[in-house]
Image 1 (cartoon, rainbow, N blue to C red):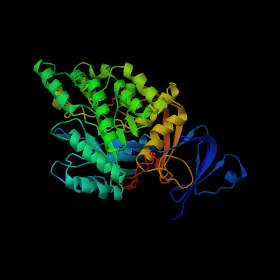
Image 2: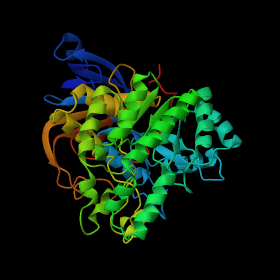
Image 3: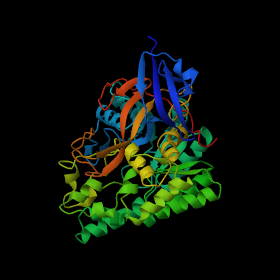
Image 4: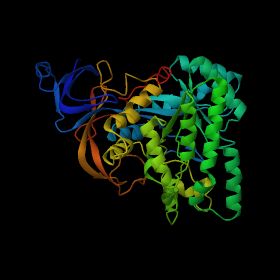
Length: 467
C-alpha cells in the first residue's frame, strides 16, 4: 500500500547543505525536497505530516563498526541484533555494518552464514556485514572474490590478538593484493600484538593486574608502528586501506603523512577516544574495567589531535566499535588479571548525540557532523546515496533531531542491553526525537514504535570513497 509522509518546517542538514525545506517521502524513499512555505511544498498532500519546526532533519546515522553477539574471551557481547539495533535507532542510527567472523580452519562462507542467521528477522534497522578474515589461505582468497560480488565488500584483519584473529605480514599482504584485484577494502586493527603480548606478560609478572595497565601495555607507539606497517603493506599491494578505531595521535600522524603522499589511506575513530581517557581506566575498585577496549583509551592530550584529524579529513569516519560486556559477570572475568577483561564498550546509542556535542563545543560544524556520522561511512562502505543523505531516491532513513533538548546519559535510561554507561552522568545538548527507517516510524516522539524484523540485510557496492 502506498504511503506518503511530509516532514515540514525543519532545517535539513546533509554533509554538503543546510536548507529550510520540507521533505516528501513516498513508498519508503525520499521523493522530493522543496523550500518550506513555497507553493510546491504547500501543495503536497500526505497520509502523515511531521512537524519539524525548530528541529534538524538529518539522515539516519550509519554506524560502520558494531559487534552484536560477538564471542570474545569465553563470553559474548551483551547486545543481540534485536536489542542492539533497537538501541541504535533510539540514538538516531538507522544502518549498522556488523562483523561476521571466519573461524580459523573454517570458510568465510560459514562465518557469514552464521551471522546472517543471528541477524535475520531480528533487526529494527537495516544492516550489512564486513568479514573478519582470521585464516588467509588459497581458499579464503578465492572466497573474498565471491563475497565482493554479493555485496560483502570489506575485510577486516588484525595485527593484534595472536592465537585468535592475528594475521602475520605475509597473510596481510596476500589479502591486500586480492583486495587490490577485486575492489574490496581491507580494514585493519593496527596494533603490534606480538610486542603487546610480551608487555602484558611482563606487567602481570610484576603484579600489575589492574585495568589501567591494559592502557599502559598497549602503547601508542605500537599502534603507530602497526599503522605505519599496514600503510606500507597496502602501498606494496597497491590496495586502499581503512584503519579502524584510531586512538593515538601518533597513529593519526602516520595516516596524515600517507594521505599527504596521495595514498588511498583512511581512518576511523570512535566517541570513546574523543570523550574518555586513561583517567577512566584508572578509576578505583575495578571500575576501570568498564573502559577496557582495544585500541585502548589514551591520555587526554590525544583527544585534541583526534578532533583535529576529523576537521582536516585525515580521519573520515566516526563509528562506535560497539561491543558491550556487562560489568557484573563479564568485565569481572578479569579481576586480578587485566588481560582477561573482555575488550569492548557500549556506544551504539550514544554516537550521534556525542558528536552533536562536538558541534556544540565547537570542534566540528553541523555539516561535518553529518559527514563523519552518515555520509562518509555510507560512501566508504558502498551504501551511498541509498544511505547517508537526504536526497530524492535515497532511502527515507530520516531523523528529527532537537538541537536544544538537554539530556543526561545514564544506564538507567539507555536501551543497550548492558548494565553500565561509559558516559554515566554526562550532560549533552541535543537529542533524537523521531526516527524513520525506509519511511516507517521506528521512534515516534521518544517512543519506540518499531519492531524486530523491519530491518533488512543491505548488500554493498565497493567503496565509493575512492572514486
